[in-house]
Image (cartoon, rainbow, N blue to C red; front, top):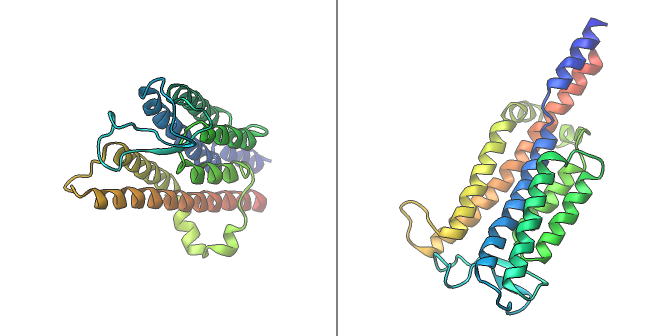
Length: 229
């Protein structure tokens, strides 16, 4: 009996890594909306040139590739920017506080798709779809990890996943800074800067995938320990 109680207390203290990673991905989507929406609103109440727009206008642009491309159904920069910021904020709030609830993944997907349709950015779709898929697995261990990842690698990742989440977030923030300001220490060639930006985003995304594998490995190990007791 005391062992079962001890296991229950340990399980209660265990951080749900899947929820953490889903929340992080949702926050990335929301921040994209806030970022694009701010610059779209700064362009004022002017008509958009079509469905595909540059969120950062010529007067706010900080470097040659700092345009922040987006898609919008709203034919006005100010309105689309306000809507993108509102939906971006709602996405952040939902991701942090409510994504683990019933239909949490569906609400995240709905918010993200609406955000995409009102100028929230194009690149964030990868984070949205990944975040939706991860959110669907909250509280349910990803047992496929055992057949895909070698056990030794799973053990290492199960310990490293919080650090991997931090690295993934840092790389996302770095890529976002480059996309807006185009600043990379000791690099002045805009073509190289653009490559670095995409590499940072891609590596950050891959790092979050590794973090998910590690978190799922830890969850499976926890379930195994509880079953053995």
